[in-house]
Image (cartoon, rainbow, N blue to C red; front, top):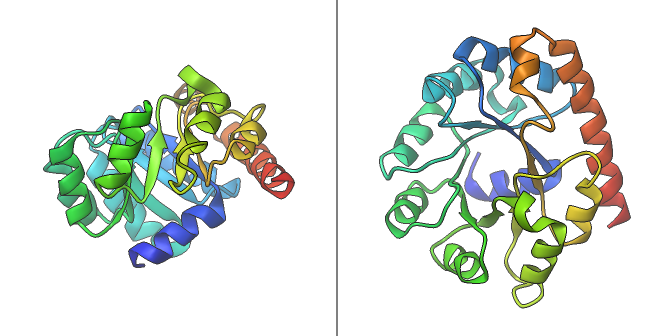
Amino acid sequence: MNKEKTLARIRELGLLAVLRGPSPELTLKMVDALVEGGVFGIEITYTTPNAAEVVSSLNGKYGDQILLGMGTLTSPDQPVEAQAAGARFIVSPHCEVELAEAMVDTGLAVMIGAFTPSEFVMAYRLGSDIVKVFPGSLGGPGHLKSLRGPFPHIPAMPTGGVSIDNVDQWFAAGAVAVGAGSALCPSAWAKEGRFDDIAERARTFIGAVNKAREAN
């Protein structure tokens, strides 16, 4: 899957599950539950133990059935590792020139983190295909709407602070997709073995995303 198809798939799905798994084994089970619930956009963060190995395992199991990426990239050596593991997109929480260049050099779909207007524009100019507005919880949908005012040409995806209750507001503010972490797939539920609950939450979340997008 090339970058253009990946970006089109992100827009089509509208939702990426951002997983900071407590262990490799539980992370794999979390993904199984999400897929069962209809969530097919999966971002495994580098804060997950053995994250690259987890992605490699998921890539072997699901292939193109899911859209698989890696997030929380903070080091310039991680983009190549993520690509080798099978990531189709890569995401950083912040905007840093050396890291951004390494991400773009992979040829993968890139999402660079930004919060302020200057960071937002810089991330896009450095090659971010979609700018990750992070942490979304600080400014809320109003912050994204304000950024989209002077920069309507920059695709944006909020992560952090996205929930079933406010996902409609994020899409109304101009998000092309949203990233959801604990509000979608709580690590505590995985530790408690509540995978059926994760699958059900996934179904509810997908329903809220689809309804929000139809309204916008």
